[in-house]
Amino acid sequence: MVMNMTDLKEYMEEAIMKPLDHKNLDLDVPYFADIVSTTENVAVYIWENLQKFLPMGVLYKVKVYETDNNVVVYKGE
Image 1: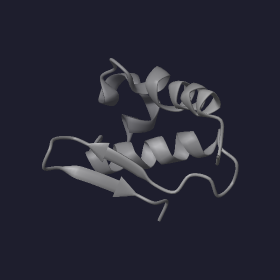
Image 2: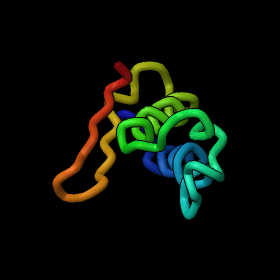
Image 3: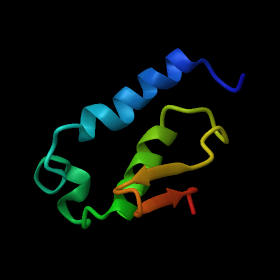
Image 4: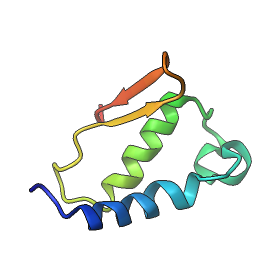
C-alpha cells in the first residue's frame, strides 16, 4: 500500500474539492485571477495543491476529464 486511502480522501477534499467545487473559477479562486482557467491550468492547480499534502514522490500524475474526448494529464513537468 502506497498510502492510506482515508488520508488521501481527506487530502483531496482539502486540496481540490474545498477550493474548486461549485465555484466560478475565474471569480472565486484567487489562483485564476491572472491565469486562464483552461483544463490544462486546472490540472496544474490540482497538482500544486495536492503536492502540498502528499509525501515527496508519491504523486505521479493528475488527470482531468473535461469531456469524454478532452482529457488532460499533468505529471508535474
